[in-house]
Image 1 (spheres, rainbow, N blue to C red):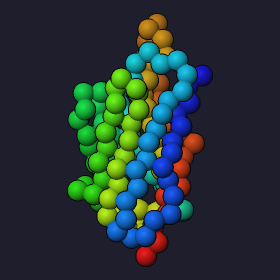
Image 2 (image 1 turned 45 degrees about the vertical axis):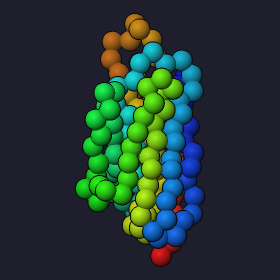
Image 3 (image 1 turned 90 degrees about the horizontal axis):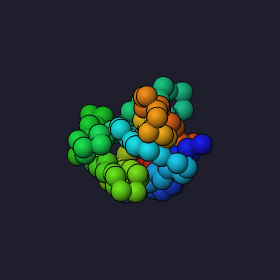
Image 4 (image 1 turned 135 degrees about the vertical axis):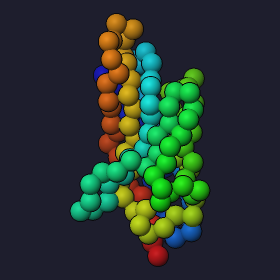
Length: 122
């Protein structure tokens, strides 16, 4: 069974930085898109940044220029460097990956991490 394990969340003052990392555990054959989503209290989960297997990133407009997503295909990891953090970035951040666990798999299946809390104080 594959699990996505996030790390790097915490409490930071506005203007500060944090780096989130996501490391899958278990048997993985291949990974397509990987990304980060977040959910603030009372709000729906929203995508923050995604990156294809070829390395093309996409960002939520409000984080463009402040956040950078990257992945290491050899290690199957994805990271999110968050700079110039704002109080409105406060949320639980979730790692997401579309992956196959076997060469016999016919399609990529979506997996989620447990989430890591990011709190930005004003």
